[in-house]
Amino acid sequence: MSESAHAETTFASPERALARHPAAAQLADALGRGHQVILLCTTPAATRAATLRMLAAQARSRGRTVVEVSAAGACDGVSVAGLGQRMLQALGLEDIAGDDVDILNILRVFLLNECAGGRAPLILLDAAESASPRELTALMQVLKLRHRGTLAVQLVLAGSSALARRLQTPELEPLAARCGEVLDGTLLQPPRLALRRAGRTLSEHVLGIGGRWLLGRDETADIRLDDHWVSRYHALLLYDADGLLLTDLASTNGTRVNGHRIRRSRLADGAECRIGSFRLLLAWPGQAPQRPPAAAAETATMPQLAATTTGTRV
Image (tube, rainbow, N blue to C red; front, top):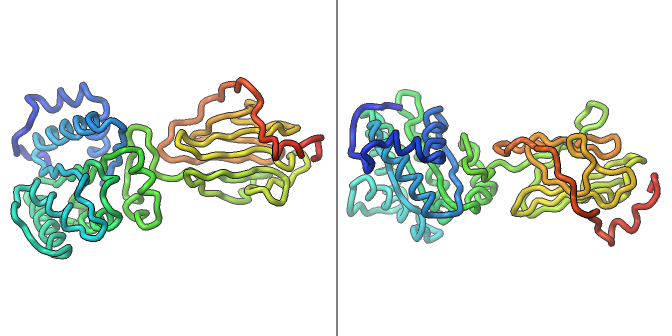
């Protein structure tokens, strides 16, 4: 991306402002590494807005064309023109009328010209969770722009934690696939659980938010572990708003996470769970590595399931 001197800034020293703001510095660093799409998820809207303003100031000081726009109130669920017109207005192009195709083509031509002029475009889309799937899909057309074989546009999608969950939907998978980094702890890619035994991977499970999976030897288990050391209803895995939670259902031979016997444990990227002769390995891109689990205050059970888990070979 070009760094030719151009454009005014809203800060006397953007670089110094970034240094005092870790989130903005992280964003700038991620963009500098060439990622095309960065996901920024923070709960306080004011904090998010300040982060984007600092990033915009730094980008403008380096000669980039910055498109600052919010999707809040722009979505009618049918047309992409509303958001597209806001982006054109942010570029100083007022009173541009037309249908979806017209607006998108004008935007594409303008951004490509900016890139050709050495002013590599950066789009900062705030409240992105308010944009319709149609609008977010239309952004893909902009992201495909190339100048001399190089991708012409970078994009920061900013919003609340709901944004990451929306991008996990099948229709937005192509956009999610372009995301290079996820900042502020909100995860984009869904976790995957690999079931291994005797050095072989037996199956892999994609874990969607809001799901629950019963692990055990019983034929009704969601993830069946056919081993006499495993109880019929051995453990329960939940994916709630706080992440993944593994609970031992008062099993006879116990559940271990990273070598520690647990009653309940939150799981993160790299966690290794052992149940009987099975290993369950969690891969969760963007998550912090698994830490040793803290001991639970009490044994966690599900009476309707655990009542049948008695004896070594239940």
